[in-house]
Image (cartoon, rainbow, N blue to C red; front, side):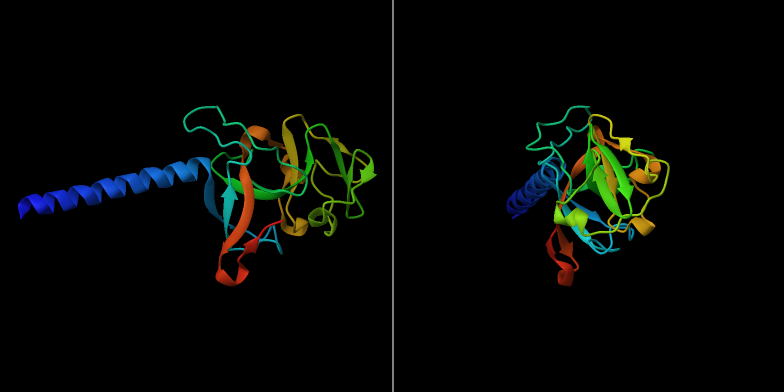
Length: 192
């Protein structure tokens, strides 16, 4: 009887260890859950939404190193990304990519101007009214996004502290792309 109990206990412990290792592997390299803490992305995301973020798409960071796996593609205009906040590496932020490295960006009368031209796509970006503000986005003063960086804005620019105020998101700070809302159930949907 004691041998049977030991075998069962050992099998349970092995199963739990395998499950934990597998969960950590998936969370590190493939997909991770995040909770939305503020209204800066309203109405796309609201406070309390829980989302899943694809880390594999932009090349996940290998833990305890400065290396990343190769990316399937780079972030582009319109992507909602989760990133390490450049002014406090203990915080993760979520915003929408507006401009990428090498582009100049300006907000004029609520419109996004990239390289001197008002953009007309993607729809997730052009359907919003963007406000000027902060050091990095004053009317009539385009700013150039450094190479390997991104200019990001919250969808609700009225209450978003974003690239207009603190600058650019370095490529190495990008965690992944927000893919879908998984909680609460009545808000479940893919994100664009």
